[in-house]
Image 1 (cartoon, rainbow, N blue to C red):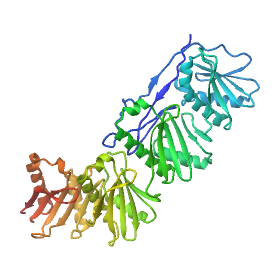
Image 2 (image 1 turned 120 degrees about the vertical axis):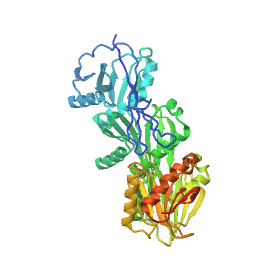
Image 3 (image 1 turned 90 degrees about the horizontal axis):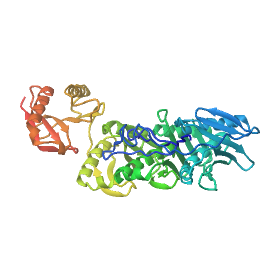
Image 4 (image 1 turned 180 degrees about the vertical axis):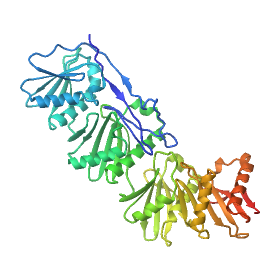
Amino acid sequence: MRAFKILLVLFVTLFVAVPTGMIFLLAIIATIGSNANSQFDANSQFGGDVKVTSVSHSESILDPADQIKIQQGNVTLYFDPAMDKAQAKAVLGVLASKCLLGTSDYQYAFSLSSTPAAHQLRCLDSMSLEFCEKLQPIYQSMATIISHQCFQGETFRLVMQPSDADAAVIAENRSDVAACWFNGSQSVFFEQPFSAQDIEAILDGFRELGMVSPESDLAHLFFRHTEQSGEVQVIGKQSSLDAIDPATLHATLRYRALQSSLLLCAGRQCTFLVTDPGFNPIQSVVHTPPFQPTQFAKNGCMLYLSDDSISQATLDAIAARLPTIPDREITVDYWISQSGNQYTVLAPSSDAVLERGAVLQRSLLSTGIGINSELPDEATLTMIACDDGFQPHHSIPVRKRMGPYLARNNNRLSYAISFDEEFANRVADYFEAQGVFTERGSAHVEIFHLDQPESLPCVQLYVTETMISPASAAQTKAFGMKVAADLFPEQRSVFQLCNALGVPLNGYVWVNEG
């Protein structure tokens, strides 16, 4: 008896700042944690370690008579002497690839033949009917790859003969695949034929998404595209999806659909679909943009999109001014459009975030102030909190602007025009030396002059209110007094904490008498 093992591999890693990594011959699904970061580590079910399920069954049939035998690695192929030997070697090369049977050390044997109706590959191992049926969708993908790689898309069948049934189980190449890219360990199916240049452009998009890359051992994707929309299919497992928090799973799929839209579908509608190994839909998200973006700017996880009504220079300035969220992988997208002097920013959010009401509105107003600072003086800006279908929930008018700023990594120093840039740079250097501006931080400090009761220089540190504790007030005050004295020696000056909107926090405003 000879052990015959079929590897069913589930291999998935993600993206989400930047998503990366993926799949098996038939398996992938990326996910993001509740804080929008991937919760899968290298030892998790879908992490870096490949999980293998093996099934043993009985000894193979004796070598077919009167056929030529060729071998590559752990795969043996018999074929009719009348067949083209180069084609047979090409079939063997696909079978022995890492993407298919080459992931196992066990020996496989097949017999290849051709008729005017179809090319046929017969598995020379005896298996139960139940196991043959489980392998059918996997072998269908194998048949599809071989059809397009070796026989120019002609009909190709992989035949399994169950040991406990008379009728053979046949896996035929998919009729909805018009082209196939394959590099020995990764494959992408296309519903329509593309030029080599177009296929390379699509692959570049998948590479940027981390779904096809040199680091990916195994990958298998399906891409559909029309002038109006696109669709990316990946293969997952229902039980694995059920184990993921529904909101987290939806956020992951929505992110993938958005990124696929931008990178593969010119910003048009795009569906990201997870199917089971039989290609039956499990779960999907359809991203339908409010408009087709023609340009975008990105800063870390912050993504700003617009149509032609907004210049690329304005988008770049907005992205440069507003800090990103450190270590966040999934993007936060803002959709900016203009009609006359009216500017509108759509900010899609999850249901849980939309329910936070006042907190959400303060956050959007803070972002809006940064955006408004880069718009023309006559502009009127409205921030709109919406769901991911872009249905409005909250509307926040923005009137305030900020002055000049300096960026130190992801940290920002805003300063009033009463201070020159040279002084602002010295202040930024000071906060770097004090450990407030760190390489991976996102601190925001503002310096300006108070209007009342007298024009005192003020240092304002933006904080999250929930992170402030009365127990640390004395320590915070001591730090603030040192900052004020160091930056404005022998002067009366103010140090204060404020919320995201720049409103000073009660009890956290201190005057340094100089």
